[in-house]
Amino acid sequence: MTTPELRGPLDGQRIVVTGGARGLGEAMAVALVQSGAHVVVADIDPAALDEMLDRHPAERSQLRAEVLDVTDEAAVGAFAQKLFSEFGGIDTVFANAGIVLVKPSVQLSNTDLQRVLDINVLGTFATAREFGSRMIQQGHGKIIATASQAGNRGAAEWTSYCASKAAVISLTQSLASEWGPAVTVNAIAPGAVRTHINAHVMSDAAAAALTAGTPAGRLAVPEDFGPLAVFLAGPGSDMMSGSVVVMDGGAL
Image (cartoon, rainbow, N blue to C red; front, side, top):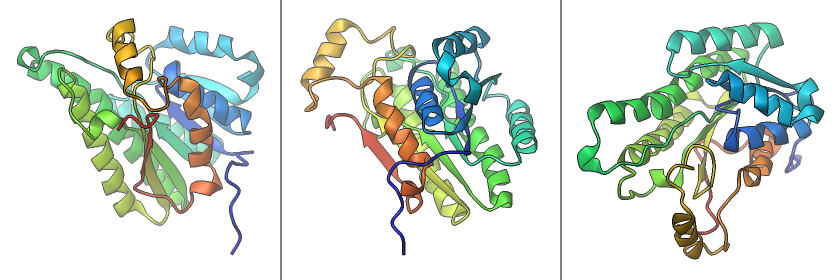
């Protein structure tokens, strides 16, 4: 039995990252390209996709942008079919698209909650289902969802987000049980990270309070997740499925 390399190589791998125009998705996509993969970044925001490509001229030859709304089931299915036909298969999908809503629960409407669930849960599931079903047919594949430490514990006024990420963790474990051995399904669970999706609630005071409770002494930045994405897409994670990989600086 040979021991797999811990990082890559990802040369020739065909990888998709949803919600990849900014934040964690962008950082993971760039790290994957730098490790040799061909990466398709999908996002709902065309302007953000163009800006992302402009930020990474050195990676442009292996980095492609596509507009996608993960809450549109038909669009996700068509997108998956197009990529499988064009590339002859997809090796790994990072189901990363998501939103944050922070609001007192007594003011949280069903419409508010449904919007978060539509993107964070149903969008993640549609992405996993459409790519996973085709990966099962091709005989191999990896799906990595973006969960959160918020899915492991509640937080005041983060009700909708915490509930959605708890659901993503459960989806990950259920799909891993159902789709093995052909397809592995794992999740990343970040702790506090300053990104565009939480900038409206991550004040300097909030960031300082979170940092004080983190043994690592700082909050994570998106670039921290690049090496983890490379590992999860590479052969070193072949024996992992149903795992939720925590990266929170020791906060939990």
